[in-house]
Length: 383
Image (cartoon, rainbow, N blue to C red; front, side):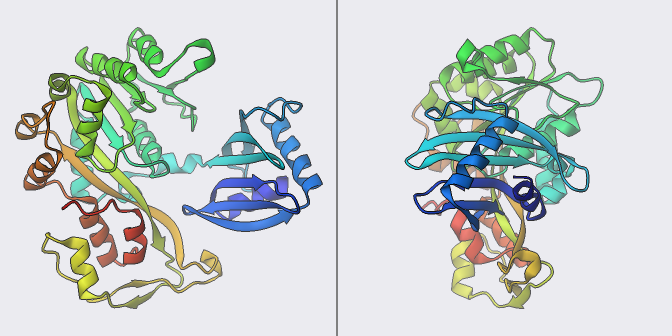
């Protein structure tokens, strides 16, 4: 078990999967967003490892029929503290365990290291500098929303400001924040958590996720009463966030009142600096990516090669792609119950919003990633 954790840390894994099977159990690591087969164990050893994980995570070792959650705090060989979130699930051949690794170093990164262009950083800082309102970060699971929010809160949490969060679960302990864990078993939901935080004299509130109308209403209430609220939502791009809020049942006039801006984001793998080569990109591919934005085709682009440093994948690490929609008076007028999402998107582009694919194209031109990598994660081009 110790070997497994230390190997995962050295390989920069974000998740460890232990999957029991009839003949041989599989161990897989998720590295830079992609699962890699690492090792196989006989079923008897796999069940012993699962029991050991449950003991470390203070879970019920005897209960094998019900999913459980736990946490482990450990150290790397270099002495850095690492948090792991555990989840078990009963399967046909035993308990499947997933360990999510949270590296506190990610919180110490600045916006430039996360992948923000200078103009994006300026726009984002202007959004989070507002005294009250709602700022949303959107994207699918595993697109780096939580890392962006923690990095943002770390910069906002000065001694003169009270920053409170309500999360499910608390992913990283940050000393500068007052963090509360959602507990559905005792009726401590996101909405109830926000209600509690409003009595705690907060300046900034971070809500882990807006999942339902009650949470959305409480977030709006917090923004209306003079607080800055940061939260996440699962949508494909910035413009569809407004549609999602309307679908949840938030009245359009309240969205007009409180929404400051939306940032949609994705993570793409970056080329390994130790072995990347250079090549050409096909003109038709480039045009399909950037249309209708007239970005010039780069002379050369990066090409993955593969070396021991990147496990022969050609990629090492990940970087963010961002799409920032700042709510202006012109856009606010388009927020209606029968809103035309495409019209909103076009209007946002006219006012300077840069879509995800343009951000991706600029990272390709800079030699940081490849066309093949970005087309896997970009939403389809709107007609």
